[in-house]
Length: 446
Image 1: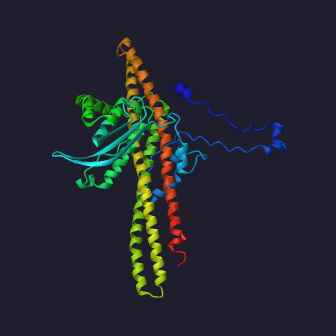
Image 2: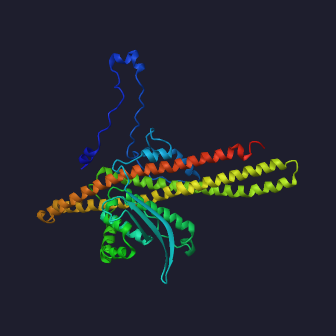
Image 3: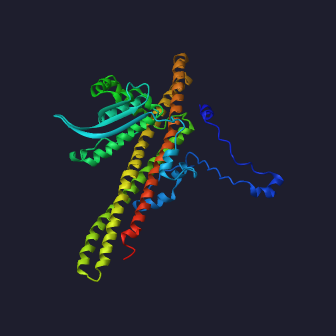
């Protein structure tokens, strides 16, 4: 299988640089006239040599994280990658993606529904497409959160070893009012919008019939289609099987090395992304405290200027400067909450999705191993299991190929998303300091 995977990879592009000189040619003066060629970026290994789970103290998170760059090395971008976020979006494209996008999905217009039994939110989903399998070029439907859960479950059932995008968590009861406040609804709307567009961009999931029905069917049609899915006892059987598989854990004997490396990578990634979430929220909290203090200091200096005639102009200038810095700080806080936080949180959820896909692959592998052991130990007739073993071998190979391809695609997407999120934060910080130090603020002239 590994040989087939390697054979499917495209050959490296031919180098445009002249070969290095040999022998006496190295001393030739003409060597200095050869055009310089930028060194090719080194290809990092898939994982650190010996991944270990680390423990962090609250006061040392920032220092430890800055020193341990193993995850950054694993997913580092080429130095030739354009640094501007807009240029990255224009130039970065996966090999398996179509050149022209043919499916556009928007989630908007949340609407509350109150019945005698429950209160819930629905979201409008507008789909525009040029695909031939759709009967129309534009659809508009309304869906609630449970409908999104159904879609995700059907996709995972049909493709257990593909990386299905995560949904925002189901609301945990902290207070009924919080569930329906505007901030919560808007955060969920953005996450649902990203969920559907992740599926639309996926080379396999985008063509699933369940996805098409979700986007196009009216509410009663979708309800009827849901009833055609697996029954309660079937779902219970799948749950029991999944639990049994997870209890076996690392009992898989013949797991390929690539998937062992994936398991190690996910463990490290889960820890790193959790640490990033912790640090970013700490930075936001400190920024918010700073913002609240500045909002108080501005009016104080304005009042002070009324009682100090000699210092009136200076104090008014300081008050104006504080006001400018306060507005700049508010924009920087918005950049954190709108760009960095959602990206980090989404990939925290992705870590659980990855673990689930790897466990389901291991379950298929373990089932094959048990059948092979039964034949080897002559616990049953070989003829009874030969066909079943052959089918399981095909199933394992398909699962391996699907997960490996999706894994590579996911890593590329993760690299781009994280780089873009931190680039946006960096640009926001630059704008913050430019606005704070601007002569228009009046700080430098007072």
